[in-house]
View 1 (cartoon, rainbow, N blue to C red):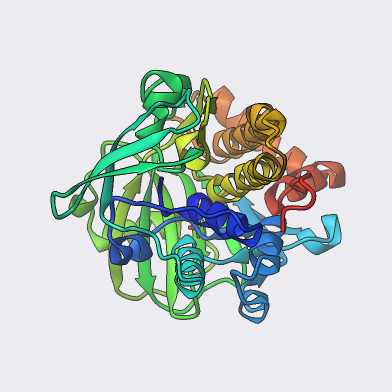
View 2: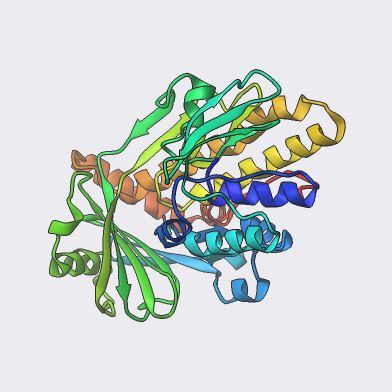
Length: 386
Ligand code: DHB
């Protein structure tokens, strides 16, 4: 369930092992390929996408970034990932990853069933779980399978079956959000810039040589349509006062809510959760899709073992295996979020402590390596996935 990165990648990997699947999604292919999401792929994730035959390594090479900059307190610090941990990240926007994954399914003759709305997952604790739903044309459908995987995003239908309710999980909200824009302009910086100043957080990211992605911290209740281009440029520019941002038409504005969430259960019988259906991280550090790929590798290993031998051992172990990285990524996303933002009720003590934390991070090579290792991605630790 869900033609997002995790559902499509799992289907692709299972097929390589001769295991048939069908991917359904309530949205249309056009909507999925148009949705704006984060843009950073860690190096272990990039390796999975290339080695499994989804992504073109030459294309990816052109998206490689060997470092990022932090700006705070009138200072700029570059983290040199190659020097610190001999790794890189890739600015490979999620909708491009999705286009490549959907193209792989179409090429293999098993395109996803778009515009199929799942209404419920039934019979989880039998060996024939099933999905019942309705197509966008109003036709009812039912899919009976050996296994159902809920990769159906943060509003997951499958989570109700696995956990008893959609909201059942460990949960944290934040008193701020991101205002995101897409701008038609050349990039101002060669690498991403994360900034913290009196107004809070600013991120200057990119999509390609003609389109830039930028964010600033805002109130979660902000209505994107009411913020003028001038106000947007003022806020973005205040994060990088020493360099004039190259401007151009803003052609998209959106507000991204922040949430940390981990479902209480990731499996019930033959029904599994992965990706945003299983967990959500706040966007700082762009861990969402990278973390989803870890779930995919663990579940792929478990299902391959089950279909090859009939043993359920690795299926039963899936939650425990996947949760190790889930909680590490939860910590990293929470930490980077807390460090770079200014909460509306922050005291002067909080502000100065925060600057102390940034000074510590940028002045100690050990601390820089800690950050660089997490940002570029820990090894997945799953063998024989391909
Ligand atoms: C982007 C998003 C992030 O959350 C991040 O940390 C870096 C880049 C992006 O959308 O480009």
